Image 1 (cartoon, rainbow, N blue to C red):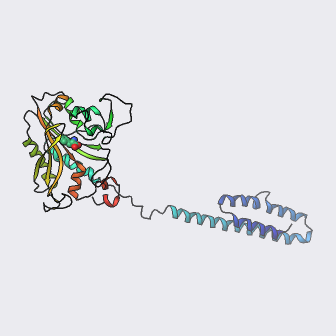
Image 2: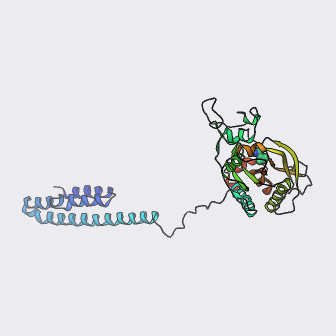
Image 3: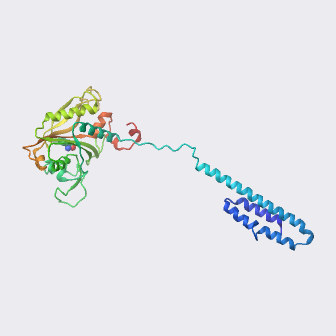
Length: 343
Ligand code: PHE
């Protein structure tokens, strides 16, 4: 038996091990009961007598050297495991920063508009985004052939054809259906605002989005006039834009108001000097409004002889654009942090 060969083989085997378990197995194989080294010791007794002393010495030193080799290997493996642990669990390293989110500019504009209205005694209510044709059009006095009902302008839900209005579903094109929904269930005096998302089948550009936000307003009582409307809206605009803003009404048309107006405010961006936001006119259109049409009251179960009121619909995106001087509505929906982080 060649002791030197055994040692060489064993040490090169040991060198290749890379876990403490493997080292344990190695130890058993060589130094354990019935292991390779004990075989060497056994073989000594069979050797010629004069060689026995020498073989004994060699066997002992084999045993010692393997023992030391094993110890060294174990130490090495423990140390590299410790290093590995340190690398993955260094509690002294600074943590990864997780960015704190913040309120989207449209949400914060929506909230501050609602706050101002609440300060004037209005309640905030909501309605469904998926609406039916009755509430979105018929009840609001839209004639059957009105262009707004067209597929081109309205996003309809896929359904079988020729359903009655009450079952024909669509994405609401404005927040006005909530006027009817609210008055059906609540007797006047009514004083509400309705924020919410609306949808239009539109090609997008800097001032048009396929969805955007509106704030509907409705005030109904026995003697509500255009003067009341102008007072409420002027005070809203003054508070929201925190400045001296002029407001003017222009005649307009909506099927659900009579008379109807468009409301302009003096341009706060250029102080009426003329700029791109106001198309050089000094005035910016901010909302549509009017006195609630008698048919709308009737369709909500109210007698127009007893009740009257005003309604308005304001573009929340538009208010935000004017307030912050933003020229492209699409930025609000882009999710671009370079834009959002400015608010
Ligand atoms: N619903 C109208 C629109 O979306 C706005 C409006 C609301 C006009 C209430 C008058 C009264 O354009």
